[in-house]
Length: 154
Image (cartoon, rainbow, N blue to C red):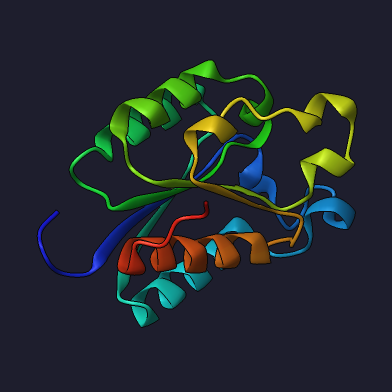
């Protein structure tokens, strides 16, 4: 990528457009729009341009991941329910080679058994879960750290 601000794409999957109204006892009261605006502001403060998108369609998410090759420095991905089912998202992440942080508002490992296995985790450099909408903020901070300092967990 050319010098300049980091270019980060934040993708959110199915039903996340309902945040703020959908099961606030699990997902909190922040809307996705509020989260996206917070990410854009935090990104700008850290020298990053953050573009945010949401889709209920797996193929659209796969397409956006594919477009990230050569155009984005990093990805944040909350795959929603596709976390547990989507080999297509896993394959797309592996194919583009762009560092990705998996994001979840709740802690999937503390929920129903079917939520405890992520199909995308092995294609991600890290995961942030269980901090409500703050998971996105923490994931962005970690991704910026990774991209600017080249740090990696052992």
